[in-house]
Image (cartoon, rainbow, N blue to C red; front, side, top):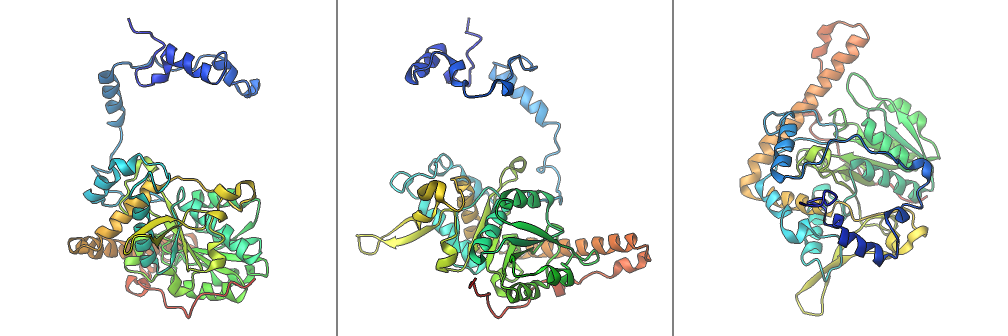
Length: 422
């Protein structure tokens, strides 16, 4: 009869193994390991849980019955978005993601993870080409984390303590930014026009001051609108000595101008649209990017992967750049903390970007993403217009006056980025 205390999926529950582990750390029992936890935080009773399912067959049937209650995105098409979107994922993305040298690899050393650094370098190169920027970091947890980091970088670069963010920002992303930046800088909210979804320039200009580190805008934004006045926003920010930080969906850059063209100094966004499944909301990875400026690079808290010639003529190696600027080297003296979190998704995003360069993928990009992006933007503009008009008790007939997607397809060009002089 099997020991009921031994769990079939957790080897360390075997009494002999547990005893060996306790002996190795010189502990009398498990309770000794929990001694540092205050008694008021410990639960001494038994959790009200059903008995364990020890049969693999029974467990599988149970999980399948639970999952069958869900409405799967494999069965229906949804446009909810909200930070995690349903996109087509080419089979090659899954094939590469599940290769053993990638799927199980911790972000280790170049001599153990063969090929990983090169794959990450290729990802950064292709995303940089799409963004028209030189430096692209290894990913963070999600778009919210990347936005918080870029805003913090802007604060350090300018020596200022206020960031202006749009009222139309995702509530979840706003919460992440507030929590991350609270010790260092204050957020002030810029209202948006309910008819167009665009930021209101008058209030923005009034909020700008010599304390403003940056203006953060998103295009496309959380509500789906394209910020057609981004260049003007950038000019206002730069005139006040602040930086322009832009958050973007990288897929949109197949039809929209790259953020540096309208004055962006720092760019961030979400990699999930680039060949990554939704995974119940967990397939997320945020990126941040900038031009190759020593002052900016010094403020990156994340991994940067580069290429260099080796001792063998014609051969190149890939490795980490600027290790001394990271928390791995600085520890408690570092400006921010970073960890090895989403490297696998960077590799998948790189595979997806490479796939889009193939001739057979042209229809996927041009016909699907371009048309869907512009259609969604036009529909959101129409919905916002109708909502605002109903709120103002105007005639519903005016709901037909929406922004033309042809006019919003591209933002105007900028004469160049702002100076980073404090």
